[in-house]
Length: 260
Image (cartoon, rainbow, N blue to C red; front, side, top):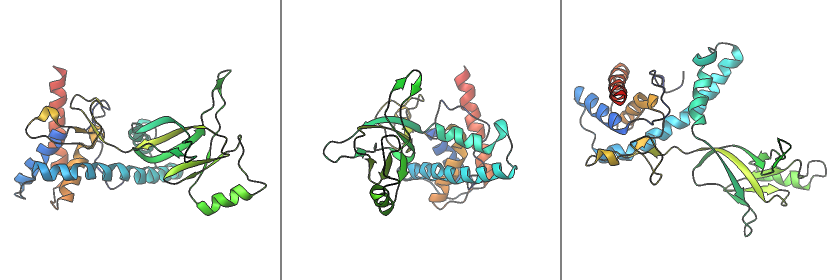
């Protein structure tokens, strides 16, 4: 198991992100229970997005571990597969955009919410139900791209394009004008009704108007992880069993309320 061992407490509703009010109130109850002080809304908000990013980034390491279990034949299959469950959560953050070349810089600008690139293809079109787009080999080494460009054997062509990924994406041959970029976006927040309306930004607990708070974008089965991680960032040591038990109860109450 990865660093966050109690992520899946059986609430798999992807329609909602983790409820920031539940996370904040759970943290307060558990901190007070152990007489470990008080976490103000201001301090909570400073750490909320850091905690979300820590958990999100840890998923990629957990996915590597899960794939090693796949290779060894020790990972459960089907719906119990750790690989499948992590991939489902990461797929929620997958985006695809078509980008046109900047005529001034001759490069393709990455969207501002890029976290990790999955792959790049030429824009292409659909011809007889088949795409004419070509996969673009990605290179992150400037010395290597220079060797590719001067080689008579590996010089890029329209059929075998290559891209140098840096602050921008530089595609060769330079005749390519549009690309499709698929990537994992940086997690941000959701409105309280589960939508993505409003200005994108970090999760926020608004103590004066809970309706104007912004929930986490991580799925709500990461509620326990978020409580635990924010507590860790504040230097508070919570007992795992208490976190799982309390947040599980709060989430069940919320889901029952939504049913009526």
